[in-house]
Image (cartoon, rainbow, N blue to C red):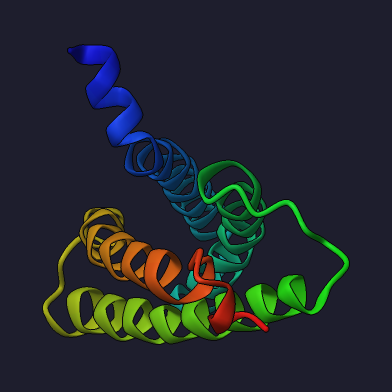
Length: 139
């Protein structure tokens, strides 16, 4: 029974594992950049970039099983992944600004809360738009 559940939800489990990895990359990079004296928005954007690179490779290959790196499909995935992640970067940055600068919530606590929202949005976009198995969407 457990094996069947794991098989059934393999993609979601892998997304959770590697989403956690990307989140850790994001939070740790953000923390180190802030401790290094970098201001809020640049720290947030640089941390996003490191998490972006980690997430693209792991989502493409491991989570959604897309191993084609040479065709138009790979270009489509990179462009749509970048656009989606830039969109969630805007959400991330706006929420961080609102929570830290306007509501005066601790920046690390805010970063964790914001990442939960971003993870959900990113999964939906990755599953149904970017790495969608329907070939018609990528040709």
